Image (cartoon, rainbow, N blue to C red; front, side, top):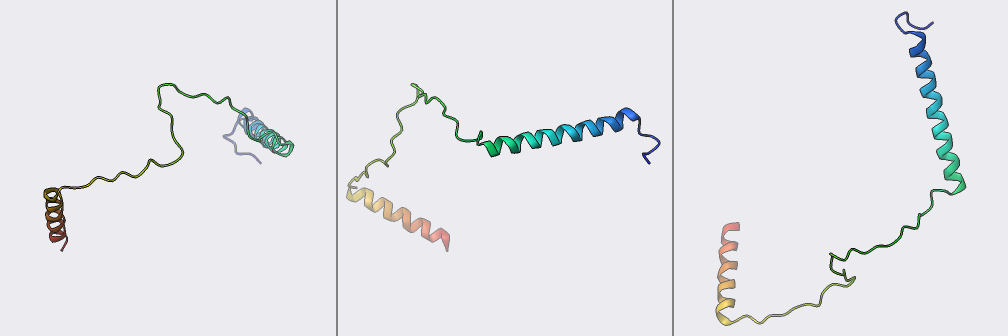
Length: 85
């Protein structure tokens, strides 16, 4: 027996919501079985403000360091290795 404080309209609302959810789930299942959820062909648009994105990585760059730059880099590496210990 329903609770005394629940009105008839509230009980009917719960039943209607349950039926609506069941119909919605049944509709989704039937659409999925018919194959309507396949890939949707979207028109391909490119934005002109963005540069063209290449699929391959850029070529490797190689820069020769001067002896002074090599010495400065070696000093930096020694300094960083000293902090780690």
